[in-house]
Length: 294
Image (cartoon, rainbow, N blue to C red):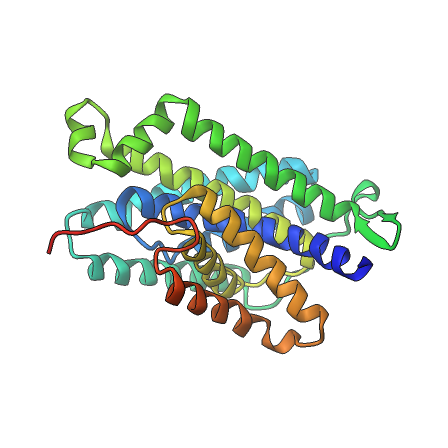
């Protein structure tokens, strides 16, 4: 029983990070039906910004987290305005190829300026290095901080989406873009705001991964980005609660598979679960089947 609880705690901390990244995928898809494959690399940029702040500027962890989120907000808006906005009325395949191109551009631009070598985050302060024992379950202070920060950011996102004018605009644009425009909503600004929100969460996830695994590299966004996309699809692409459930399910699955001695196959297990769920329920766990005229 203690082992099960221990793996659940580990899965919660990892799943929190996947959920933060998955939220960016699902929000952008919900607004403009775009799979933003550059999102995983925005998360990578956030990790590097946090590293520079902590290792070279010697800033506090929480200040570094905020700076990384702000930098990713700017990056997300620039990507949307420069790469995606001109293709707003283009075919989906054109936008998809552009997203892949932006992803590669971010990866190799970072590799050019920062090098391909793995970077190590500086040592954590004392209050983040401790651990607590509850019976036979060990919970580190870092795990608690990661879970707490993730939950706070998710609650803030829900508040923005449900209780603010911009959040109402996001929901209106996701339901009917033309009707929202007729009601006086700036569709372009709303889409940019959605990219900004998703990129901020990805930046936070990058810093949390940096301190959790203590290493970063320019290609670190590829696999977590794919897994976060899997999490979004698993829960129901376009649904915020679905992204949360999918993220925690993916994180817990990875940890349990590794814990029983099959760490080599943890990635395969994640994609196998996706295939099974999509066969049984193609719209995802929380998704609903929608009829489309053809």
